[in-house]
Amino acid sequence: MNTPAVTNQPHNPFASTDFEHVKERRAATAKWVTLALSVLLVIPMVWIISLMAIKAAPVLSWDYLTQDVSRMGAAGGIWGPLIGTFWLTLVCLLLVAPIGIGAGIYLNEYAKDTAFTRAILIAVTSLAGVPSIVHALFGLGAFVGAMRLGLSLASAALTLAVMTLPIIIASTREALASVPRNFREACWNLGASKWQTIRTIVLPNAISGILTGVILVVARAAGETAPIMLTGAAAYFKLSPHFPERLAPYALGDQFMAMSYHLNLICRDVPNMSEAMKFGSAFVLLLLILLINSVSIAVRVTLRRRKRW
Amino acid sequence: MASPRPSSGSWRASLSRLGDRAETPIQAVIYMFGWSSIICVIAIFVFLFLGAGPMLFKLNWVEFFTSTNWHPKDDGAAPASYGVLAMVIGNLAVASLAMCLAIPAGLAAAVYISEFAGSKSREWLKIAIETLAAIPSIVWGFIGVTIISPLLIKYAGASMGQNLLNGAIILGLMSVPLVVSLAEDALRAVPDSYREAALALGANRWEIVYRVLFPAAKNGLLAACMLGVGRAIGETMAVLLATGNKNQIPTSLIDPISTLTATIASEMGDAVQGQPHAQVLFIIGLLLLVITCSINIIASIVIRGSKENR
Image (tube, one colour):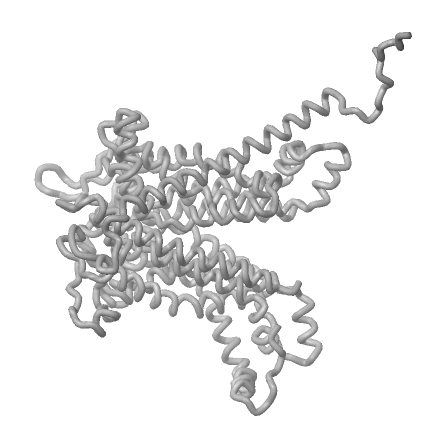
């Protein structure tokens, strides 16, 4: 008894057609191609950072961080530039944070949708797109020249503050906009004034976004070279050898050393400079920026978890 | 959430009362801060014009834009001559080559992050892209000089490692994060109802991307590319270090070039303020400012247009 072989399956109306197979295959290909291109962006970064770490490893030590620069960076350590970058960033932050956060509050809470507000928004986007070297020229003309601050830490910090202003305005504005409107309405209904509402409800709920913006500004200010190059960074500054002065060696009116400018000098072929010393400075700067950046990411992630809406 | 009013008697309460009484002055200060950006932009224009000074009228503008002869110091051998054509071409060449690398990779990464990735891999990729964006331009320049330059000499047969291609690679990697984040924002801004409608008609993920999202987000994507170009044109330190800074029109990928930004950065330190050389450098700065500001304003109009259409 042989049962006839099933030659013709009953037609399944739900089976995928050839066209649908092709569609699926196309979608899968697209997914993998875009994934491959994304990973392609990450690979050079990982490769470059690890290569720099390996080449810098021989010089990295406590002494390298705390000794003075000598022979244009070919010997000694990097204490001068390191502490210079710290003070430069701090002064810049003290200038830009109140103004930028205030401007963000104005734009999100007070400004009405008028032509003037739109002009301010255009100014913020244009300011964000101004090349860093143009900021340097502005700092040279306005702070070094017209305000007679000379080549100094103050001029450089002011220039950096103007440059980082749009970053902090944009992030504050975004953070405030993410606080739901009914939070504000509830507070107004309790009789609170506009400023009371902002101070007690809006700002505490937006603090993570604002902090992220502030930290981004720190990272940007610490790494930027062109604006400080024309406004006060010095190739060498003799530091006091004694302890307390070493922590704050530069007055506001002094020229100063900074990591980014130091690296710029190193790139121009300092005689007799070992490969490890070169990579040492570059890697310390990179590490510093990446650390600041990961703090910003950590702040964002932890505070986002605590959000209640 | 902070309580609207701390209990009375504590130092916080007195601070809070002080805060309430100071409402008017605080608001006045906030209004002033609100105008800071517009004041800064105006001040930048004013001081650049002041820096350029009388040279704005004395400069031979035809020569400025059509000559490649950049000889800024009148040293007796030849009269001073200010032609920036080679730098403009160098700037455009390095920026457009960089965009050839950055735009396809950036758009692909944005599509993957916004449409294909799961929440974990999306988070990691975004962190990686942010890290890429955080690397300072001087470090990119250093990478160009010390890591990419030997590779180009070895594998591309360049006689000088610091050249157009080196600059383009560095600049491409630098501007990718901006393109990715703006393009991702643009894709995110497309309402989910568009995706759901396409899904209901039988479209799969990829068909949604190229039949629905690309047309719907085209203005945002275009703006992302434009802002990437603006970024690439204005970049200074990395380009200064990686492109070799030689004033010539490039004829091949491995020619050293010079750009507007790099010229200002390398020559301003030596130029005497108030002399023609420094003033011409300020004019170049104005030129850069006008180019990048127009790119930014056009891009924001393009984005606004896309929002109003929806």
